[in-house]
Image: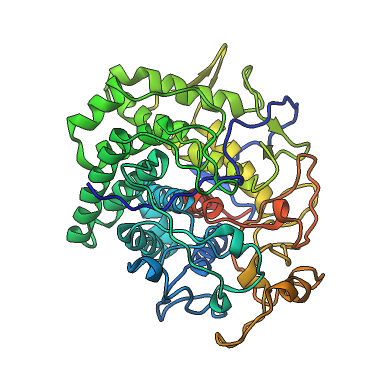
Length: 490
């Protein structure tokens, strides 16, 4: 079995988060005939969220590419190892292609497309989401690759003008990387569900590759830390194995994957969902099967409830910190990934509870229903869009006082000829250490966000607050689609 997948794990999250208790009053959901009050134009927020993912594309761009300031980049990727590794996504504000977060971006975007198909169609974004998923899977089929992060971070330059080395790392039998292999398997299995109606042969290819990668991941176990300190796997690989097996079962209905889930997989109660920690996502997916009658999966429903109970402020078991203004805060550095991730899981779980009317989340002596979960999901998304103590948006190009200095090379460097030579040492003087707005609007990017006290400084150098990532946005797409479809004007 051949597997040459590039590794990436890291410092932008992972682990198990800060513990804290904070009393605050949550904004209640206004329910009327299945609709919720619209505090923002969620259709616009959804469209812009997808546009940001287009701005993160690497490779030869299509003619219908919407961010006009972006151009072709990294067209020689893989040449050093005589492979075609052009394409994929840059993960954040740098020009690096990390395998683990890229695959997670694809998995979660595909999940949004599976769960909110009609909502995305109604918003006119389904084709764009399909294209975004396929942009990732086209690359993952070639085999994930990443830049040399140390060299990349020595130059503040747009991807179109970079001249730094395009180093390739791989995992194989001798150097295993279970997390990236399993996450890529999950991405391809989830994407196969999304794309099988439009291109059955391509979806079948994805699914076959997903099966091979899962077999590799569970046969050759080991964590590959070649991407540290940028993406270090703090949670280990058992969550990715459960996650991949779950998506493979959803895509194939084959008993071997359910047997693995029930007999071999390890699960755990957690209070976080992120690129590094997938348990809660798998537990909610498996809770659907429990609610549909597979009662031997009751443990996963209990663990999914535990995740919700650890987050809701009015739960007797809540553990995560909530800012004075109402924002979930696990840690500095792309904290909004936990916000959009939690909002998405709460949204999906609320749909399951609504469909199976007898089901609730049980937290000690309290029970929470579908409306309560969606209220929290909406409140978190509304905070990011501008309903917060600072009355400012944390999505570039949307709402009131949006960020103007996103920590992002391509956005902050003026467009220039691809042949122009740039002095890397001076690049930070010219474009990084300035107090000017970025010349190119990074439309739709949700930045890292405020600190635990709702403070925010819109400065490019303040990367923990102003750097966006693909997985922040991929996790926002589904819940924004739901809010756009099921909301009414104030």
